Amino acid sequence: MKQTLQILLGGGFVLAGCLHFVFPAAYVKIMPPYLPAPLLLVYLSGLCEAALGVGMFTRFAPWAAWGLIALLVAVFPANVHMALHPELTPKVSPAALWARLPFQAVFIAWAYWFTR
Image 1 (tube, rainbow, N blue to C red):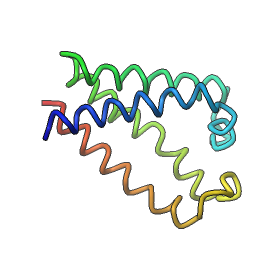
Image 2 (image 1 turned 180 degrees about the horizontal axis):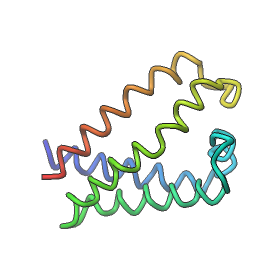
Image 3 (image 1 turned 30 degrees about the vertical axis):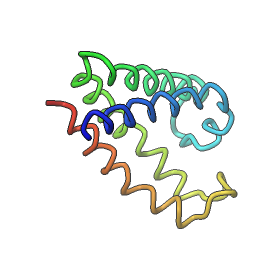
């Protein structure tokens, strides 16, 4: 079961990272305005997500998991910004935007499971 969850975590982040390159405008739109170079940050975060996701399939998985934890903490302000500004994502209900915030902790705990 743990191996399956490791594959799901890694694959999910690879997919999420790739989406930054397929739909960059959608990610730029939700970036907090106080952050510089939003497009660069979208590409950088996408690259990190994909690379760390791939890392979950290697012997470096514990380090990749720590990287995913750091990444999840780093992108949390953007998720809060989305919840505070639901007009940025009109196809997503405000309740869903708020409901997804606690899932960051779930993903952090999930990644933490692979740090040992």
